[in-house]
Amino acid sequence: MALGKLTLLQLRTRCRNRCDQASSQFVSDSELNDYINDSLYWLQDLLIEKYGSRFFVASPYTFTTDGTNNLFTLPTDFYKLIGADLYTGTNSNPYVSIRPFDFADRNLYRIPDAGKQLRLWYAPRLTELVSDSDTAEGIDGFLDFVVEDVVIKMAGKEESDTSLFERRLARVEQRIESAGEARDAANPPTMVDVYRQAVGTIYYPCLRYCLVGSQIMIGEYQTVYPFGGGYGY
Image (cartoon, rainbow, N blue to C red; front, side, top):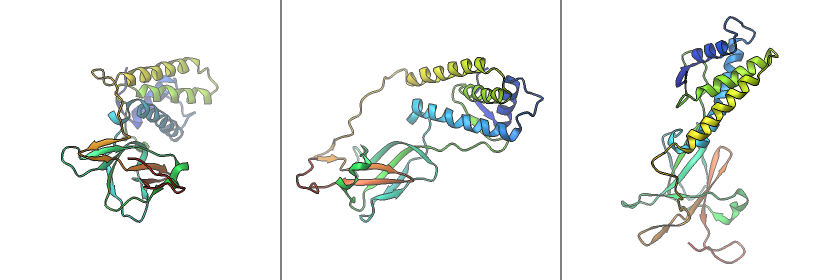
């Protein structure tokens, strides 16, 4: 049976039944909760990689440069960045994408001018299941992945053969891979040019970003290289 949304209690019950430990406390509820949350983290990584902006997206986070700092705090629930936009202030194309730069190149970018508005699209961190009524989302039955992975850990602890469960897990993982590639069956992926986008006669973006721990560094093109030469927009 494909699994969609399930509570922590339902996940524990399915894992115990699948591993034939329905009446056993060899793996305690507390330990089983840890197994489930660990597997959910793994599943989330797979789904973000395959579904990204089509599913795991928090409400956009916005901030404005102040002309003094180039480091800005990320949202508290930030996990992975999906995209960054610069507000242009035009009606026809209010936002344009900006691209990252390598941390090694951080000194090639000056502190951005004040008043530049940015918007971040990101995947939020997974909220651990704690209460029995807490619910996990498996999209299209992908919570099977969690059940099979947890059962491998349970069977491994009692030194039982895990090969059957490993094969089942591999099949679910392959299904996730295949389904993710065909998420938008009507329209294939397209290339997006984020290097230079024209809005009227002005070219954007002049900014780039770099993730630095719990902060995002915003840099603006310098008009002159530190050692001579210049950037072209």
